[in-house]
Length: 145
Image 1 (tube, one colour):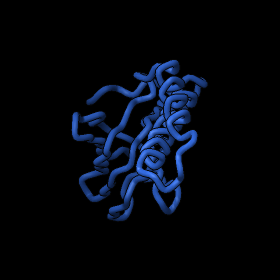
Image 2: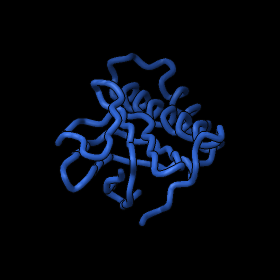
Image 3: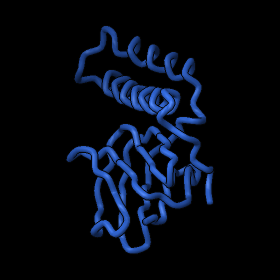
Image 4: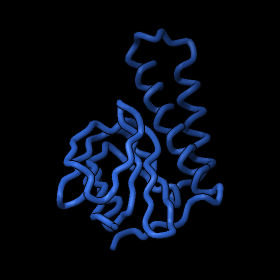
């Protein structure tokens, strides 16, 4: 049974459609939302979001946010989210390398180190989502329904 699913960032609606299951990285661990899930509000952490609809399985990288599940469906308000089918591996690798380089020689308690570490986490999540998509396990999720 399907439910409404939206993922929204400050810039755009990344996805608005239906889903059978959505797996979300939270600070308590990964949770999978199914139809008729109990009402829930939870913080979303940086990681890979997996969406199943019918026989299709799609992936996105999310940069934290909040989710709300209620009788109307699942809504995720994310700081940023990127669909794996729109990612370019070389750009992700370059951004990861830049983040790693920015961390070198910095004290772990400096703002610069923390910002570089956060960038590294985001790019690592993108790379994981991209590899799952390219690994033949992911289909193409419609842009919106």
